Picture 1 (tube, one colour):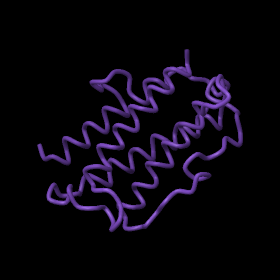
Picture 2 (cartoon, rainbow, N blue to C red):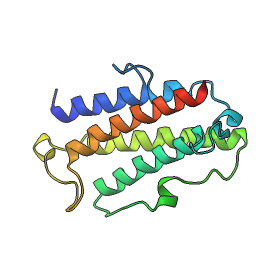
Picture 3 (tube, helix red, strand yellow):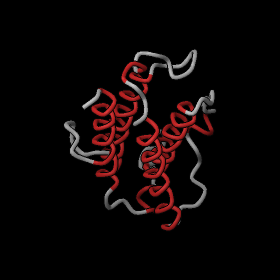
Picture 4 (cartoon, one colour):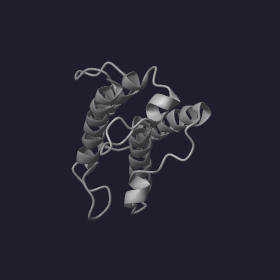
Length: 150
């Protein structure tokens, strides 16, 4: 197994399941309704839905960079507003999250191990830091969601 395959496996575990740290991102979303996702139990905290949109935006940003685009999200793009709080919009948000993660995993499979220490683009973090950071980002926000569900 190559290093990129091992990293990809850890990214998949943090997102889909069998993560060492506990519940994956998708596992903590299990059973969350649109109403629960849109709720803001703490005024200063993001809702579960906002976190899902944020994580989706981060995946899309990384995929764009892997394709050579110098993308830097604005605060509004990094934390998109929830516009429709209906159940179908919530299902759509979760589907987009999964599709974005799948695109990210597909995009990294062709990266050669020798590139891991290189910057994705000049002035940006390395492939290695970006990919490990993505798994850490998923674990962090999964923990946030777990707390918001209590």
